Figure (spheres, one colour):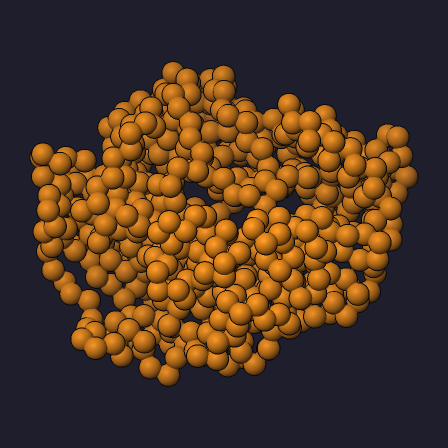
Length: 586
């Protein structure tokens, strides 16, 4: 258990109070509406075997105290500024307290189509208007944000809060940190996105527009794929944006033509012509979103850009045969498809959640981050912060450091875990879970019928901030998908764990992991939707098979479910059944 001195008193930080972990620090809830950011020392488990990281940690602890004591006080209220310096046993600065922002999501989530299904586009205007005012006032105080990215902006209650303020640039204290996806190429080397010049207020405005662009269209300005063009972030050096007709834009992204001409011109000037400067607020105020009654596209123009195209028409309800694949559209809805399973689907519209037979399963608003589970005629909703799993119509949950499940004679307590830090999933035969505390991860399996946990699962080290985790179950296998952030770099990981607790294989950043959130397991395989079609992988993670004939029916945001006659593929407004001929069986 970590200890710090705060205002002359000793404060013990329990692992259960940990609410976040990044590349440089852990964050704890210390009560009374306050959080404490505790810097990781060179002996932190995250830095084990990494001499460069250990050296950086020593330098950070030696210099950050002076910067915290000189931190500007006249900053706008949406900056989550340091309040009080916390000291270690030697009297050296170990971290600081700050206001705790509750029920918040990083702006990264606002660029995810699945998360935004519960948030109307019009909600972006007040959020970014608030952020714009904060950025302007920060600059007026002679401060530069510097490492301005989608993880240090928290959206809560329609307001945008800036966190990680200890990295701000002011006076004699430069900001040396940067994130590739948001660093201004004008501050970098000509041939590499490596920071060589100081951040400026102009580079902050570049980051602001990048954030806005990403949240409006669900794609980075330099996102997509340019054949032979290398990584998207490298294209920032050549200013090759998604406006370039050679770039293949992700299917889940909105077409850029949904935006009004004045805003598109501004983005073109910034990302192609290197214009910099404060963002004009009228471009936000003038955004007016509407949904086309003919094709369902949401846009901010006077007329629907899709229906204005020659020969444009509404959706066709057809059965399509493409090579070995037969696709049957089972549902075409004006609502939102929020869940799919072999048993059917769940659609939200007008305050009601309806199953595939039209019956109302739930009522209420569609909330961001809520998960929905279907089993037979059962429909369950789980909040984003709840450690709850379902399998075979049976529920499992964590409460006060113990795991519980429904039993024949009442609730059964079957294992001990770390309170408030545990994630768990259940399959028909066994379940999987893990918790993290102080850089140490403990992964475990549990039997669907016996008590006790098998906690000897040796996962690859999870360094940095955990952004997302999910687990699917097949024949004796658990397929764990993770998204991690460290030093501004995002990593997608897939780990295959056997029923015996052995890690069968692990892979990072395979191209097909872009659609891992919508994957499903069947037998000894995992099926993953991508913009290029469905990809099938085995437990060795070698020789992934791509079914390109499924490409017209899925994208990286599709959710799959394996049924008896094929795969159910759910997109935002439709459900398609995919059947493959025997010779091309998937």
